[in-house]
Every structure is written in structure tokens, then in C-alpha cells.
Amino acid sequence: MIARWFSRPSASGALLLMLALGGSAQADRPVAGPPVEITARPPLHVHPFSATGSTPYTPIQMRHAYGFDQLASTGAGQKIAIVDAYGSPNIQRDLDYFCQFFGLPRPSSLTSPPAGYFTFNVYYPQGKPRTTDSGWALETALDVEWAHAIAPGAAIVLVVAKTNSFTNLLGAVDYAVGLGAKQVSMSWGSSEFSSETSYDYHFNKAGVSFVASSGDNGAGVEWPAASPYVIAVGGTSLPLDSSGNVTAPETAWSGSGGGASLYEPNMFQAPAWGSSFRGVPDVSYNADPNTGVYVYDTVSYNRQAGWFQVGGTSAGAPQWAALIALANAGRTSSLNQTGGTLYSLNTSSDFRDITSGSNGYPAGVGYDLVTGIGSPLANNLVPALTSH
Image (tube, rainbow, N blue to C red; front, side, top):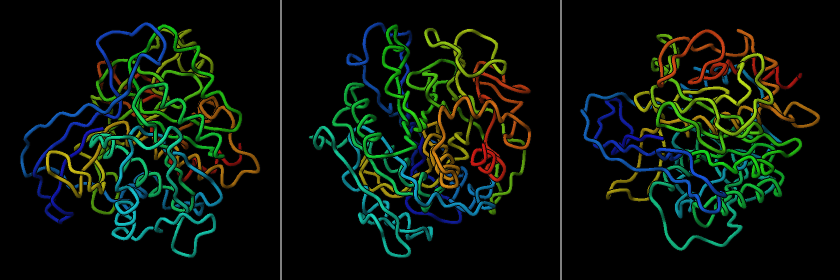
């Protein structure tokens, strides 16, 4: 992801510092060997920029832009798992403040919370991390706050891996499934490696949907987004007015990860994607940092904390997980192999086809290697998934 730091939310949106905070890392070439030798991290880059930049989007704007505000479902009865490394020691109070500020239900550890609250719990399956990582803390705040913004009635479990090794992250994924989560968001990754298919079983779980960011470095494929059992989310640029109305065509974001996998087979995409190897991403969502969203995080980064403007494909993964929770809330059984289901619904009423922009691969009519089959028209897509 990429973030802009704000001293406070304001009408002028005065900008003080820009952080490039990648939701997933990509090396120069594929890495051979098992994932125990690989780590995922959000790389940090600090850039100066003008104080005339854009104002971050609110939950009301984003919900309207993608049609969530036309749905009755809140995700009640569903459990969304957010899996991140290191977590944030301040997540409970930061989430509470985010909710108070935007008028959302507030977090509670109770299984049956009172009116105006939702269930939120944090788990450390390998024990609490010994250190705080400011980049992962901001990623954690983004993931939790925006999954909640889209599915405010769903319970959220934050499962924190002790380190950013794939051993610990995949262990946290397994733990999340054991907690009963039917939607698992993974805003992290690393370059593909030759043995990756032998680890795809972590995501091949009946009735559980796994969602991952496709990467923020433009053309190129990352794992676990490359797994055919994972919904890979690419990135767009989404121009909105203050009410959340789309003011110009949504376009592909240049940083959106995408391409043809070197190792993973095409299991669900034909005929949308004609190769025998899997194409990434499957779908897309707002990711351009210039059209980013408000995130509240009080863990200091370069002695700055508070409100951030955040973009990147890591912003789309938790919101897509929340979308699936909205659909599952109306079903008698949770969706199975959701990625394949999405391709069976590929119609102009369910997705906004992104036909311009490039990450090195051009966006075009139908499936492409920068935005997949498009961004969600949630007011139609969620009912279609519910009834599928």
C-alpha cells in the first residue's frame, strides 16, 4: 500500500509527508525454495510532495462509489479474518477512534455485543511479537478499519503472525480458518518461487474465501495472490466527488501487480484468460494513493502518527473480503471456490470493466493482467453471489 500522512482530517486535506508503504514485496526474480526461507513485508519509502494533493476518501464515499450503500446486508453473522505480521499494539484504541469518528459500530470483545458495537478480537497464535514494526502496524490498521467499514455487522478477528516469515504467516492463516472465519484477508506477499504450488493447500479449504493483494510494483506476479485458490485483487484509480459519485472513468493504476504465473495452473479462469498458467489479478479495487482512504494509526512512523491517506492493492483485499462476507450473510452455506464463481458471474451488471490505464500490461475490454475482470458493482454483485 502507499500512504499519505495527515496531521488531522480537514476540509483542505493539508499534506505533510508521503509514505510509500507496499502491502506486498516483490524481488527482481522468482525465488527458488520453500516459503520458510521467504519473508513478506510492506516496504517503506518516504517522498516529499506538494500540499495541494487530494483529500482521502471516507467510508461513506467508498460505500457509495461501489454501491455498498444500496445493500441491506451488513455482514451480520459472518467472521472476517485479517492476517498480518507483527500487528499493532494500538489497534484496539485506533479502531475505536476510527469508528467513533465515522459513526460506525465500535469494537467489543463480546461474542454478542450490545447495540452500536461489533465483535473484534486479536489472536497471537505464535505468541506476541517482540517488536513493533511501524509499516505492518499501518497495514494492520488499514485492513481492520476498512474491512469493518464495508461490512460493519461482521465480526472481525485479527490474527497476528509473530514474524513476517511465510512459516508464521501461513500458520496464522491456518489459525484463522480454525477460528471459523469464512473470509480471510491477506495484504502481503512476495515473489513467486518454484515450490509454491506445494503450499497452496493452505487456501484450498471448503467454504472459505481467501483474498490477497496483487502487489504494488506494476507488472509482475506475487504469491499467495498467484494461488488459484486465492482471489487476487489488483488496483485502480477511482475519481470521486465529496459524496462518492464517480466523476470520471475508473482506470487501471500503474502500480497494480499483474501478469501470468510462472508455476500456477489456470484452474478457474478459462475462457476469460486463455493461458494454461494462471493470470493475476482476478478483480480490482481503488488503489491509487492519490485516491486513497482515511486510516487512523497512532504507531509512530518517522515520529508521525494519526490520520493517513492510504492506497495500494493492500487496501482492496480487506474490502473484497468484506464484500464476500456481505454475500455469505444471506446464504445458507458460505461460498466455495469463490474465485471460480466470480468468473461465472462476469457480466456488465456485476463488474465495472476497466478499459484504460496500464501497469506495463494494458487494461482492455474483458479480462486483463492489471485489473482482472474489473471492480465490483456491489449492489448487483453481492445479490448475485448470495443467490449463486
